[in-house]
Length: 138
Image (cartoon, rainbow, N blue to C red; front, side, top):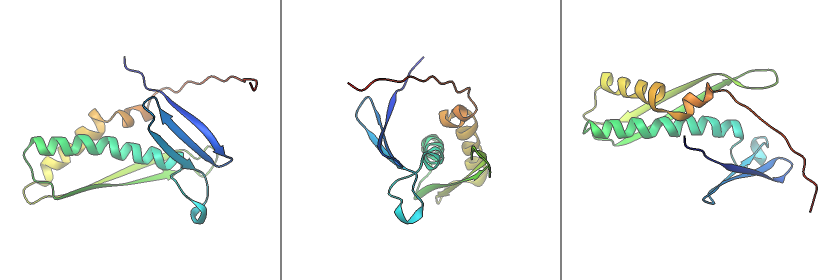
């Protein structure tokens, strides 16, 4: 089993920074549009899902020796109106620009990428546990 760790630290009331053990950081904020400087945690969830499924889709098409001129995924999440405002559904629209790829083979690659290989998609279905602790200031 492989474990991953990140630490999320408050920078201000609506601003946070997540860092992994290698020192890579991601900024997050919960501001509304005009003041927004970073993605929200819910935006990052959509980004993670898109990024995870993108890697496998691209690698599988390249393995099939298909030319990739451009590739992107439009990810749309429909959130619950109440609290918590979880995603009721998420739709990923994969777009491949290629002179030699076929629709049917790309559709199969997309299905494999999301349903079988994407760790983020599988994690959304996983059990989530939690714990809490209070520490006194040093």
